[in-house]
Image (cartoon, rainbow, N blue to C red; front, side, top):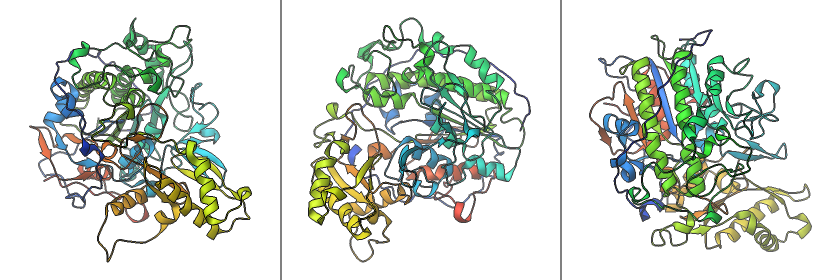
Length: 591
């Protein structure tokens, strides 16, 4: 139901005690093509007649959550993750089926049920050829998009909104069906919150890191609120980060020998330090001496940032009166801490292992809040991820990833471009100026005709393919073509081409996209994602709550993340849009 004045509530502190088990090691199956077969789906099934429609839909997106988390840490989980797994419907073969597996595209795909080629969020950032500059997925320079506070990411200069999202999201579908549906999104990341919230949420909140003791906290934009809501400001004033951080910072919650299968230490020189990393690189992860930063300025890099997000989400239940009447509402929560830990230390580190042990408790407390405030039969919840994550090359299994390593296209471009120019007879003065995002955008002078540009792109792709750590290179010409495999045997390249086409938008995608070999990462430090391989595409999907509560039901039928929004819409009796806005996914068969 929609309110004009917010209320406040409190959420209990989070417990941190857990048991232990030996996680499984990553294997070669991580690197196979993840082109998913079409799932056993049927259009818009009605819920069982005896099941009441949920009053609240909850979407939990755990950033960079690999599908093997339950296999690796399962016996040590006894909180919320365990409850979701043991009482929900678990899809073990769920995947994103687009190629560029990044945060922005993943969240937008979950929210809209559409592929990046259609919802338009092809990457976290892309090159805008018309403007001649790089654009962030939620960048918006319109005055009404101004963000409250002095966001350390530069949002004081560039506002934020979902204006780049080209398709309506689940929240928009619900509000189109009933204007009284309330839609609230929260995350540490602005792009995660805004893209999940869709084109017209009632509120989207994210975290402003700040730079010192006088700044930092959850914020929003003037487009969505005249000021930071009082209940959010009150939460910020508690300085929960300081209490959760304690005196020592982030130390393992268990003895190191109980993190079986996880790497205890990451070499300092390969720890990723993007976003002004201010912590020590080894346990205990504490704020560097001499830094002006305080715990609330580093919440992305300690596990408790997501605890705070879930605490605030629980307060939103009262403040926004979510799930309090027959009109269904929507609460979308993205949990970002695992992505930061995965990037900095790799997915098989003790840091990531410890993150999930702590997240297990935090989600358990959040589920208790849902039970108490909405009722255990009053909500339906979907857990998934925006993408998985690949191994840190320096620690990757050589048997599973024989070509493991790092390939930074910017470092190789000059030599490869010169060779490509020579092959097509392009004068050195006519070489295009490159812009590097999730690929290479080429800015030619007007003197270079389109045929020469096309031949140069093809020649550059050939130069890239010749490198040992590059599996393939895709030009905009190839991804724009209507060529099919009809009349010839299908090949693995056809599957990859289909995945890259789902990630391709002619106005936002680069001229060339590099497909690295399995186990190769495209940055000089850290670990990450962004490939069409199984370790990046395969993610969990768990449906929990009415009508799924009961003994665990494991579903091995393939499912896609584009199916999540249509499935949730069907459970609350909301039609998915048709025509040009129709989702690419379909509601999963629930009988």
